Amino acid sequence: MPWEMSRQGLLKHLLNGADEHAHGDGGCYMQIIPPGSRSGRHRHLAEECLYVVEGRGYDLHQDCGRGDHRHVSLDATGAR
Image (cartoon, rainbow, N blue to C red; front, side, top):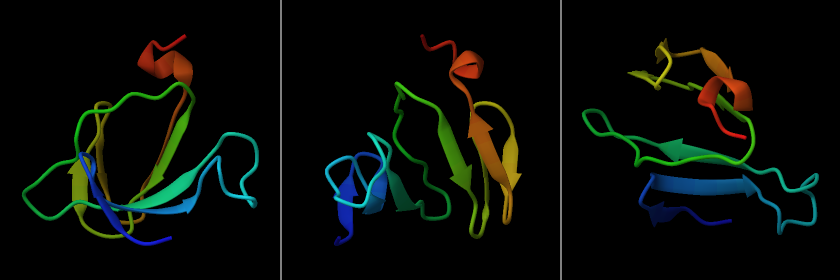
């Protein structure tokens, strides 16, 4: 799939619910967030995992940097 500009920044979907190789409704994408900028606000109806390839930043829960991974469960975000 091609790169696309969205309110979250530059995205490339690797798997999505419409893809014949996706499992269930899950998805996977790469996101580029240029230095000094940030992604848009977003919410999830399911859990989220992220992996930092390079650079540093933070999510609502903690700082993160190259090689870090995060798993945010529904309980941690207050979603039901």
